[in-house]
Image 1 (cartoon, rainbow, N blue to C red):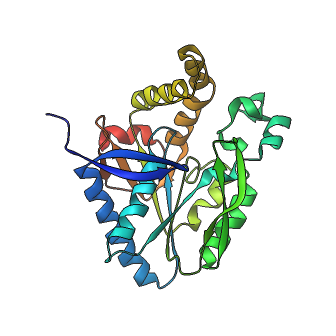
Image 2 (image 1 turned 135 degrees about the vertical axis):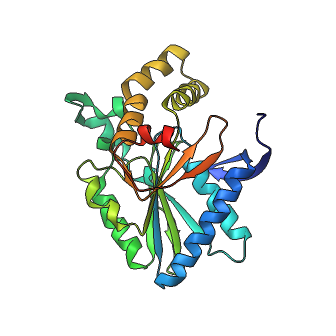
Length: 266
């Protein structure tokens, strides 16, 4: 089978304008999801909050940006606001000063930035409850140019009735994240083959200026561990599976436990 037909879409992902090719399957899936969420939001009669979790490298931020763009182009859909979890990293000065216990090892936060322990869950929980209340919310974002959090960077107005939050740890069963995953009205876990994620993540670090050896070392020490933890400890009502060619497909059934096992089932 040849590569699927691609449609290039102009997006802004993590603050960076980009021209991203998507398969027709992925775009059709997005339209289906938006139709489902619009219908559900209108039934609820209030703001609907959706959590989209995925391991690093699976493309959750790109998918969230695509969903937001498509929602604004379809008059039958409720406009969707996409919000990143990355704004809840601890501030750079905190990460530089603290150490944290990860998988039984005490390590400097800066050496494992991006792991569950380098996020401020208490602050996220507070903001997420504000979000669920339907009020105006000021949401932080992570600025990759300065490598730090920018507070109150995104304004979510009261008339934002469909809101998607995307991030690695949203649906984790690890404490204390298990206390907030049920705040969502719907939850989705996006998974992909770990070997594919490995290749993408090493290539991403290399594009950022690291040598191939240093990129592989970062994967071994941090990104690879995060991939394993997200796949092993995330629970969701719905699963999305990305294939080797980048198309995203739905996978039926509630997912509890290992997302890695579910890749073969998808």
